[in-house]
Amino acid sequence: MEEQIQNLRNQAIARIMALASTEEVEEAKLEYLGRSGKINEVTRQIPSLEPERRSVVGQLINDAREAIEQALIAQITEIKNKTDKNKWFDPTIPGNKPQIGHLHLVTQAIEEISSIFREIGFSRARYPEVEWDWYAFESLNMPHDHPARDEWETFFLDTPENPKLGKMVLTPHTSNGQVREMERVTNPPAGGPPIRMINIAKCYRRQSDVSHVPMFHQFEGLVVDRGISIVHLKGTLDYFARRFFGSERKTRLRPYHFQFTEPSFEVDISCGVCLGRGCKLCKSGWLELGGAGMVHPNVLKAGNIDSTKYSGFAFGWGVERTHMMKSGLKMEDIRTLYSSDLRYLRQF
View (cartoon, rainbow, N blue to C red):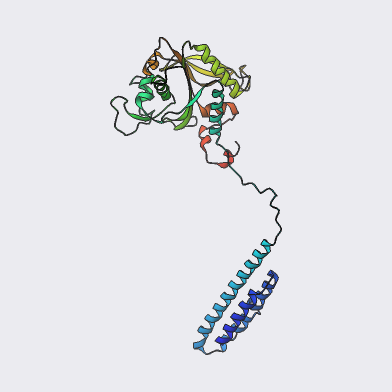
């Protein structure tokens, strides 16, 4: 009985290896493993054997069945591989392009903002996101009791203080780059102003609600030269508004107060729906965009620039807020911009 099973196994494997089509393999499968196949014929003989031989024969039958099944699978794979190799292929047919991603909405906005200011001579600068108190506050004419320097507004780092520069912070605004840029151009061999800088970077504040996020992006503009006035500031803002928002959009300046500019302004842009006439969206015809102003003499002094010879203007706006106004998105929560929901991200 044992020899009969071994011969059946070897015979089946040899025959299967010689098969040339999947149809022949299926026929062999029925012949050996089907309900009326040869393996089941042998299995039916087990009850007639002596009890002590039944387990041995049963194990041999199981081994034979498994070996035949593996041979069938291997032969089908071999036949398919040979068939695929013989298929005609035209190498000039264009392939199926894989799906690729795209730049995030905020990154798209940063690239567009950079290109617009590059058109009028601004150079892109990058300054630290982990900053000293001196550059983030002190050099910008902010006194020690200013609310922005409160621990509920700013992320202070648990590091030793610098005797001159103070504590380390996650920079709450891109304005930290103003004095750093002034120092750069006044250090030999730079030779001093003019400055025409655009600084775009991440900022951090301890705020989180539908209109604020702890990390966001700002772009900071700084111009310092002889004879710079509010007229130059207004012209620069109008140019950006027309290029970024559309040719019919305009800006206006409203008096305001910032520690590092004098005079200071809030910048509004005409509503994209009513173009300044007033509608349900804006009511007054204008939407708040960000802050701007003429660089304070104390800030120029902190940057080693003589305020009796040079003047300048600066502006700082949120990238996310600015882009949302352009696109017309009616987003109830700014945090949606940093959602990982692909259904949202694929729209842009």
